[in-house]
Length: 306
Image 1 (cartoon, rainbow, N blue to C red):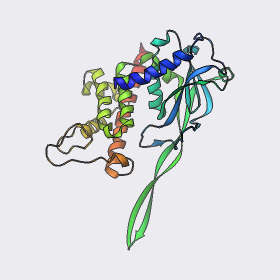
Image 2 (image 1 turned 180 degrees about the horizontal axis):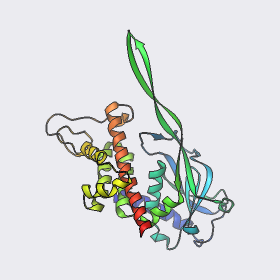
Image 3 (image 1 turned 90 degrees about the vertical axis):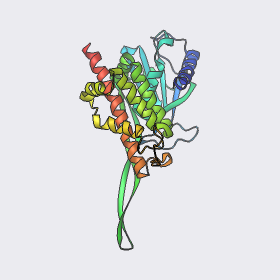
Image 4 (image 1 turned 60 degrees about the vertical axis):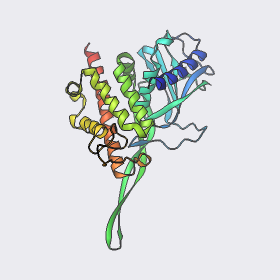
């Protein structure tokens, strides 16, 4: 995971260093070279999808150009079309947490922001009023069922359709992430995204995402007690960990080999279609995001108290 993180981090830092030169408190202007991070699709999710992106396309996942000023303008982020652009980063730039910010935006938006290139800025940021939120336009999967009489028997069939869906991230969330992010939160989000990128290993990576949060509190029971107020349910975490660690009837993508001959199979090619695979994936995603979201809420509440 460290190699995975470091490679992307070095790429973004290299591009940012190459195009930087303005002081942190000077707004980038139209035509200036900036590091643009383009979305190439959506992360694997049981509910949220993005219509296919062809090579060279610039899908308007952010329909309205949006400028977010964090910490009174010390950090300025621009979202335009399929691109996320860090316009203003405080000095020293080498110490700025690009990677936690980048991963958090991917986690919250469900978008794979991963194509890093230097680009000439096509708009004037000064012409945009600072917003309090950025809104991403995606699609939500909707399960549609129908009944049909076949040979005198009523059979039920289902398929997925999509409907418009929006996800918003506000300035306070991003400021909270930059101010309060712990290594455990950073690792948990990284493990989660790696599991989404490599579905063959999603149970193992989701297990690690929950485990690293539990370690921050000294163990499972202490973590559940601390995070219950923020939405963590013991039954949901237990189910995820059981899916990943079952030994009597393990899943083929779990952490253990079978003790006998009973091995349950997750069809990673049909995660959203095959009934057992769909159920396990959907419940695992929900439990993992529940733990990550609760831990972040806990950190924000504690930060306000302090």
